[in-house]
Image 1 (tube, rainbow, N blue to C red):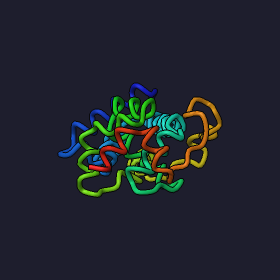
Image 2: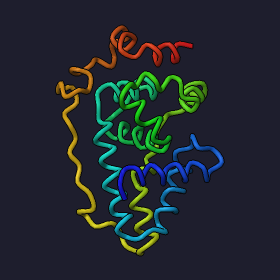
Image 3: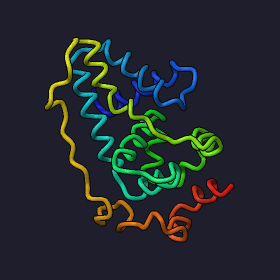
Image 4: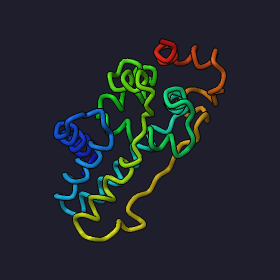
Length: 183
């Protein structure tokens, strides 16, 4: 399974649930669909998922998660990115490139209006759950590798660390999200 096939899996899973903004429902459906595939594809899906997690490990996106969820720990950022992956390829790619575009997503607007956090820990276990359902055993310890870039390291993630508690800096860097939260 490559990245395009993984995104197709997520698209089919989103199409098979009542509310595609419900990350948990999408993750559960994706795991069920993946469980029907060969073991090698399940293992490959695990690597693709973590490659996407590494790709999205960026200071600007972390800042957006911090704003939207009223704070964001390391684990919280993983769960936020898991939720973002369940929202599909277009939402993910736009948010990774320009996190302020999250303000235009109906799921984000609804979460802000309802004071809900945007997290999906279950997404991190899509391949794990699929492998367990398909084989009756846990994923092997070496099922994936991950190398995170250093946030703020000037590697294209926004040019340095941000002070997420500095309202003026957040408003300057994420004006649409800041305005959405002020509504």
